[in-house]
Length: 120
Image (cartoon, rainbow, N blue to C red; front, top):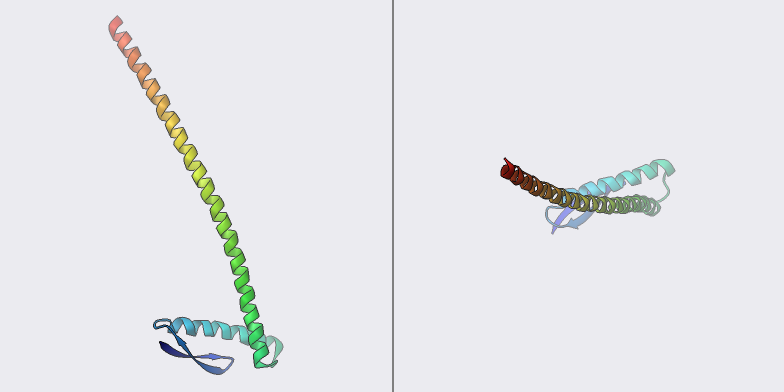
C-alpha cells in the first residue's frame, strides 16, 4: 500500500492508496482543496469542519448533476441505437426486396432473350 501526503486548506494529511494511484489521489486532493479555497474566499473563516462539509456538498452537487447528465446521455444513446437498428432492419428489407425484383427482372429478360432467339 502506497502512502502520500496531501494538503487541503494548508493542512497536510497522510493517506494510503493502492500502488500506482498516488498521482490520482494527489490530483483529487488538489481539486478538493480548490473547493475549500473557493468557499473560504467567499465566506471567510467559518471553521474547518463547516468548510469541509460545504465543499463536500458542492462536490456531491456537481457529482449529482453529472450523474443526471450521464443518465440523459445513456437514454439518448439508447434511442440512437434503436433508430440505427430500425434503419438497418429497413435497409435489409429494402435490399431483400431489391434483390428479389432484380432476380425477377433477370429471369424475365432471360425468357425474353430465349423467345427472341427462337424467333430469330
